Image 1 (spheres, rainbow, N blue to C red):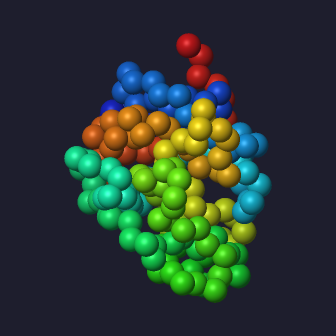
Image 2 (image 1 turned 135 degrees about the horizontal axis):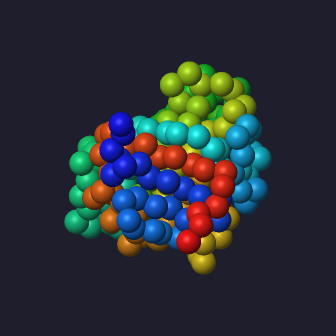
Length: 175
């Protein structure tokens, strides 16, 4: 039986739960979908592992995790172009394909937890760059990621391990 301490549940009514800790979170503008596609502004449902964790060393101090943490550099990006060979992969910039810059002026990518959605056997157009990152504003909707507060993401980093599963549920959490 899986250890419940290694499961992070995300619910369609905007909550993320690990152990007995409940965080408010933002989801894709079109909430959670089973069959996500690139650009549909939905968060994919399913069970996902954590691939990598990036952070801005100039903005986040005293960060700790059981994961190896990668410092974001100014030329780091993530390819979201369905025509690119490196679709849904970390890339170095400049890049002629459509991409997201990981080094941003806003704070949402100060910490990025990369999920393995459409990652191992990438299918073009199925969706890319599905991250847990810092929320925008007052939990404004995302393009498909999960946003939580800076305080809560640093707490989450201390609770997760390589065995952690992120379970994104299409149903609401009953409180």
